[in-house]
Length: 94
Image 1 (cartoon, rainbow, N blue to C red):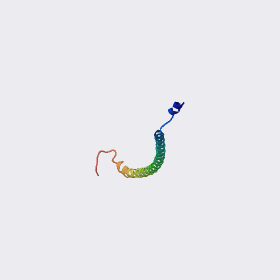
Image 2 (image 1 turned 90 degrees about the horizontal axis):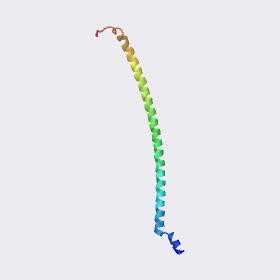
Image 3 (image 1 turned 60 degrees about the horizontal axis):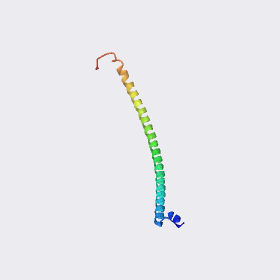
Image 4 (image 1 turned 90 degrees about the vertical axis):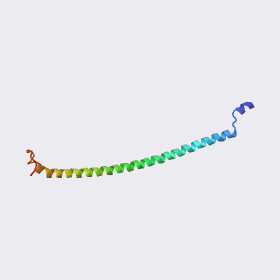
């Protein structure tokens, strides 16, 4: 009967090592989980900043496109009256 008890006895150093490994694994897991949460929050903030920046940039592009369209229409209005009389001829000059 004494032999049966000895089979399940562990050295104190083995138990201490096992406890240390479990504690280290748990602490690494918790640190990683906290770090992942921080990274996720940073990613969300960065995405929000990028979205706002994209919206501002799109508004600027829309404004620039509208101004450019107005300039092209004004230029076409100035050029068309001059181009109509000479449209049929091949001569260039006064």
